[in-house]
Image (cartoon, rainbow, N blue to C red):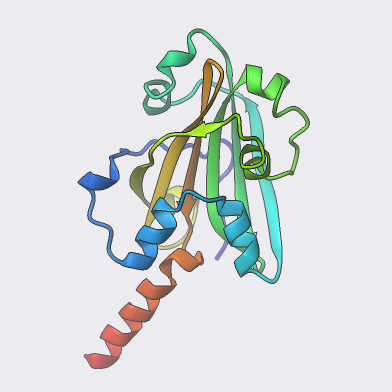
Length: 189
């Protein structure tokens, strides 16, 4: 599988509270609602971990992002998009909308370092509840009709919040039980 989308990929999708969505199985639900560091989880499950920076630059957020960031007031933002790769395969696409104040202070010189490493090692950040979405794999330049699942939450420090959104790509372990169930169903037919 190759990830063929170019920066900025974006996430112009409908986001919903988890209570409004039926998640297909317990394993996927565990991945979507896990409040720990996704980066650390991916690292722990892969023999070879890498972070691929797709791009980062000043950008006007999508309307669905701006509505979530309304309390930040008048500020500029940077969009940062990355792939978390496990075992040489892209497992997670992540898009973060970061207030310039965070880029200038807490998150300066982030480069190819995982954002989660900074967020989960700084107890000043608080995390909101998750919102969930579905998206088609083709939205990410993936030649597949698979429906992908994603989540987003706000990380807040002082008077600013940023969005961290993550979509589990087809090779993610979040779907391994789904793939097993589908294969078992095919064998029974």
